Length: 153
Image 1 (cartoon, rainbow, N blue to C red):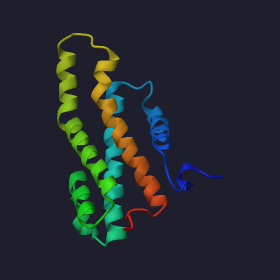
Image 2 (image 1 turned 180 degrees about the vertical axis):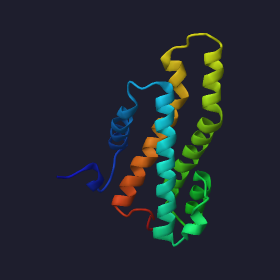
Image 3 (image 1 turned 90 degrees about the horizontal axis):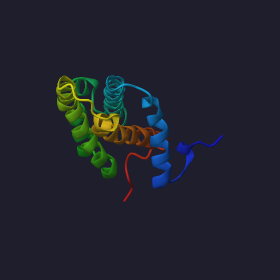
Image 4 (image 1 turned 135 degrees about the vertical axis):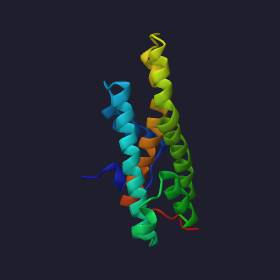
């Protein structure tokens, strides 16, 4: 059976459809549940990027052990990983840092005001961050499956 990973090329619609499918795991979850899934997924991506550095680019485990997501992204850019993916990772890192350092605190402040904001407003930034992260994870899996980490000139 052929899967999306077996396609030679992906269209924008292919990617969007797969990302939306992956985002279904966030449906009917509270803000904190979605936030937790998001951060856990970011950690899994970070681990995958470190393993990629070790296995494909011969970076030692000692070097990757304490790397952050942003440091792993920068190192991948330096070793020649395809630039379209490292550019996507730049936004993922920025979003993850925003989520980890500001989003939860902002949510707590909003909650403390005793004002009921719509679900849409509460989830707006987080859903945007989730979409970018799930796109990066899907493309990681696709590129790994197809051994397409480096674009031939």
